Image (cartoon, rainbow, N blue to C red; front, side):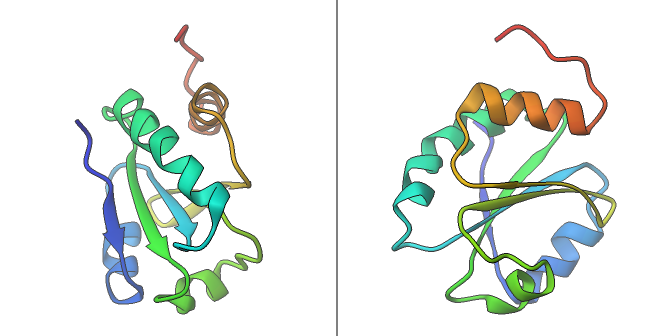
Length: 114
């Protein structure tokens, strides 16, 4: 099972900018209902994409700096990075198939049948 690491403002730069593989960051908060509904979707997506993408989370209430830098105005927001560059931003709840498909498209991979 792919582990979803919890980032902080202090660890964000090292994890995102030094990552060799693409990384998906979910910006969330514990009071956000859509964020809570997204948890199992992210776990499934992390398993589906384990070979290609690392999935991490950042609590915006406890770590506001990265959210401010990346203009996160609504949560959940997910940003896909590759070598520190923002490839794609997804705002709001997405189902597993939609999320995985959009990530694969952003990475230039063919969509697979799931």
